[in-house]
Structures are given as structure tokens and as C-alpha cells.
Length: 153
Image (cartoon, rainbow, N blue to C red):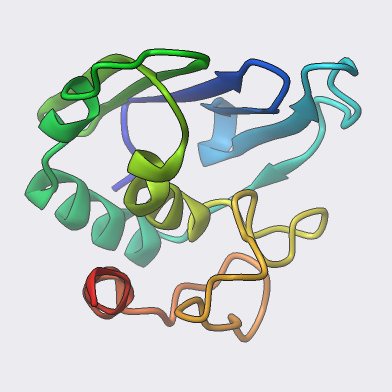
């Protein structure tokens, strides 16, 4: 159930830059940096989501709407590019005023990025009270519906 193509890049003026790309053997290569510094992590940092993780991600992705990302009047510094193809392609580029509109997407992506370097996931922030700890890196015991519903309340 690995997608045929998966790419995510987010950069923000004077903020954090994220990069995720699916490459060989179903590995998602991950990088996180700031605008002041080059990428600090080697190209060897990756997660390897399970078949079940990809299935849950695909189901949630197909049910999601990203139209709200183009509704901001102020496009002042955050750029996002996303492309994921399972059977159907989801692809968009958005320029935003800040990253709050990306919280749901970050939480959805975060569950795919749990690895040794990012044990809580690439996008994890201390304020997320809805993210459960996996039993081991790369596992997906989480129910994405519950996580996203908790965030909506």
C-alpha cells in the first residue's frame, strides 16, 4: 500500500523548514531545519511506515479537504508543496500567512514520520495532547479519526 509518489516540503520565512520524500524500499526520508541553518540531518534519516500505516493515511487523506489552504488573504511567508499518489493524486502548493492552517495535515503526516531521530514524529510539538506514544518507532496503533476529531474540539 505504499504510494507511488510522496513528497512534502514546507518552508517559512525565518521559521522551520520540513522535507519528506518517499524513495527506495518504502522509506520516507526526513529533514528538519531552520531558515538560518542548512539542513543539519543527513540524508540517511528516514522512517519506514507499515502497510497499515499507509492504509490509514490514505483513507484519511482521501477524506480530507485542503481548500481552506487557499482561502487566506495574507500570504506572508509559509510555502507548502505536497504530492501524494496512491491510486488518485493529491497535489497542491499553498502560500500561507502562518502554519496554523496546516495543523491537521501535520498531525496526519506526523504519524508516518516516527523514527529513531524523531521518536515523536517530525512535526510533534509539546502542545499536542492528542498524540499517543507508539509502542515502537514506526508502529501505527493510533486511530487517525480519533486524533483528528480530538483536534477539532
